[in-house]
Image (cartoon, rainbow, N blue to C red):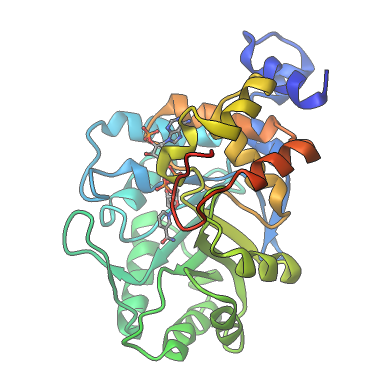
Length: 319
Ligand SMILES: NC(=O)c1ccc[n+]([C@@H]2O[C@H](COP(=O)([O-])OP(=O)(O)OC[C@H]3O[C@@H](n4cnc5c(N)ncnc54)[C@H](OP(=O)(O)O)[C@@H]3O)[C@@H](O)[C@H]2O)c1
């Protein structure tokens, strides 16, 4: 029996008071460590806090108690990277994080973003005017209750505003000590390089998962340059948690769940990969975090990698 199978089966048995069992009560600690910007270490398997808001990422969650419970459980499970944005709710996700976790445990990294305006449920509009980015940084500081934001990400480069002006705000906020590290979202290699001429880029957050790999170039670049790569929609908005194809075949072999296999594939793909699966449910959070206990072997990695059919869709029947 290979180590991963033992690890997963162990996780699924009733907890026993053994050393191994207590190590598995904080599974995220087993996902490996990455130092954001070279000096901010996180366990690589994080949590995305977008799903905690109302439908269309708008307004309050249906069950506020459950949202708070998810955030607290994430920290208990060893997660110390939580991704959010001013636009999730808007503001609701950041407010929930503060309510659930402030005063923050030592070592917890909260990554937020600005650069998208919200005009209604499911509506997102790029807004990169420097005064807006600065205002939203100030408001995130206030909402989160911190003196400095650990990781502040430009949610989108606004094509209506010179890109250098948007990168320039990140540089200035960093110099002023309002943010510790700067990140980008939905960018290609040329854009990352353009930004790096102005400000040091600690992370790149692009859509990426087993069935959507359009950012392979950006991922390779980040791996080479030791820039954290945060894949959004790591579960293809839940498609990869559904039972079909290679993820399910391999999950059955390991005694795990499809979502765990999809996340384990990401973790193994690159040492700079920082997946942030999102969920509104404690049960799914626990299941997803146990992915850190899976070590896919080379043949499983190959089968999963090759099972991709349509790289331009979130989900694929092959998976
Ligand atoms: N930078 C950007 O432009 C951008 C864009 C989108 C998202 N993001 C970030 O990426 C994070 C992740 O994205 P996401 O949450 O939208 O997508 P995701 O992680 O790919 O999938 C989340 C969806 O999968 C379901 N799910 C999660 N775990 C499951 C499980 N074990 N079994 C069955 N269903 C499961 C969730 O539903 P339940 O709630 O029912 O579990 C939810 O609908 C977000 O939270 C956000 O922080 C960034």
